[in-house]
Image (cartoon, one colour):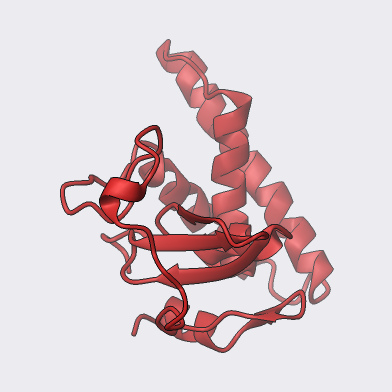
Length: 171
């Protein structure tokens, strides 16, 4: 089990335990033909993992990690480290935007920048791909059977496919 998933197996967030178990026997996971066709089937074997901005997120994460290591002992624990992390993420994304402008390339949409920032912060200070589900009060259960075969049980019992929780190239 990869270390990030091993850590997730025993983590408790917001009073809810994240467990790496199979679905309870009374849970009926939807069959592929029962899934809304407007939503992609996350478990389909032919589905390609979307990594359009994964390289940039990995670059930003590396720069932030180096920056945090360089400031060891200069920041307070906990929230001070997170504040430093947010500042370093913003600085890294700003450098990338300046590179894009100097190369004549379009800059990232603010929504993409926010997604990259959240991905980096969750990978460094949270439970990576699981964190968005743990932070969502409408999520009751998370069923994971591989990095990209994720099912979410929402409040009210509705099951829906989730986004991948890990990058297959890294985890």
